[in-house]
Amino acid sequence: MQSLSVIYLCKNADEYFSKSIAQAAKIADEIVIYTGSEEDTQLKELAIQYKANLVIDPKWEGYGIQRQKAQAKATGKFCLWIDSDEILTDKLIAEIKKFIETAKENDILAIPRLNHFLGQKVKHCGFYPDYVLRLHHNSYTTYDAAFVHEKLIEKADTNIVHAKEPFLHYTHNTIDSYYNKQLYYTTLWAKNYYHKKHKVCSIFTPFYKAAFTFIKKYFLQLGFLDGRIGVIVSATSAQYTFTKYLILYSYKYQKNDKI
Image (tube, rainbow, N blue to C red; front, side, top):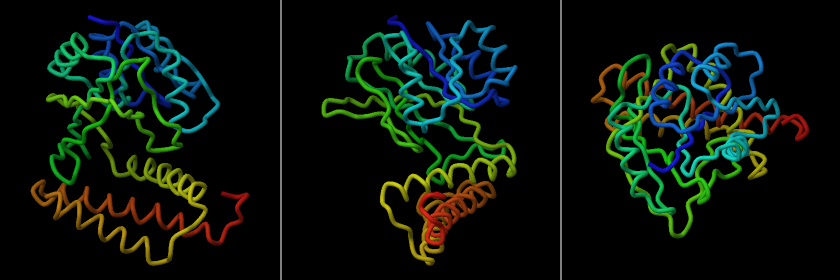
């Protein structure tokens, strides 16, 4: 099999990281952990245990740039990107091995994610199959420079191959953890949007955007089939949308140098 670098971009070792890296070690020729944290003892211990290349970079330049810098540390012919709360199944590992054996330089593997929220599987609300582009030839492409919601750069000749087996993705086990992360991402999104577009939204935008998000998640994407968790996911998604546009609107009352 051609050499494979598994790359993690993470702040610390969350509760699923030990399981994630244990599975990744089954297929990786090298593991790169790119982090801004100098104090996470568990992360350092796991890096030693699995002989990973731990790179500590406290200079944060946004998700896209950080991924570019992380990829520069990878020496494998292929790069597989995994988040610290994602776990490879044995079936997915077998599928990845098969892909690497026959992949051309312009092939990118899109891997579905089976998302879990509050410990429960979510198969609707747009949460599944939730394909993400994660496996590519190291020299063929990289991530764009977006500060948040970064993406792999697709070229004119890019060929997307869809995997059948999913990552197991454990998003949040508690509402508290969800809200803490939500505030971080909504703020990043609003800042990025403002600096790109140089404009804010109207006071009504957060309301109708949130309402549409709930309708889309619960009705159009069949969230009602997931029962109570479908209601919760649809509602929290609507709140996320409301918050990010409300923050964007608030910039109307702030000076540019404070944003």
